[in-house]
Image (cartoon, helix red, strand yellow):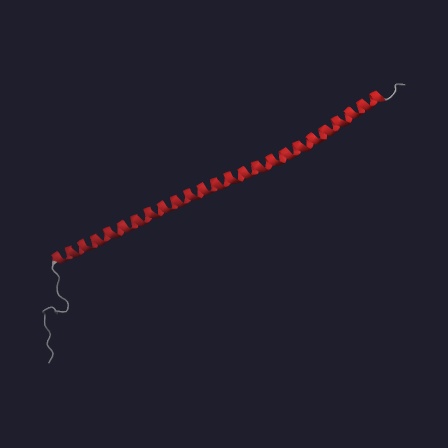
Amino acid sequence: MSTMSTIPSPAFPVMSMPLFGVWSDVAGVYRGAMKANAEQLFLSSVNVIQEQMLRAFITASQSCADALAKNAISVHQQSMERLSEANGKAVGIMGRAFTQAWMGSLLPTK
């Protein structure tokens, strides 16, 4: 025999109104925790990006300074080689001119 009742089933108890307020408070607690987590993730990510960009900039600046120093040394060395070569040629020209002038003075005049 089957009977129907108007009494609610104990499997689905009726919740009172104060219990709904508790669930709202619980949801608010989780919402606050999730918001704090998201803010922390965002701010820490920004800090990591700034730090890495600063490191990259410093590394690039140091690398550039090293390359400029090597270039300056190379150009200075090449410059000194050119000046030394020019000095040798100038001594040769002066030596020839002096020798010709000296030899010219030894020749009898016509």
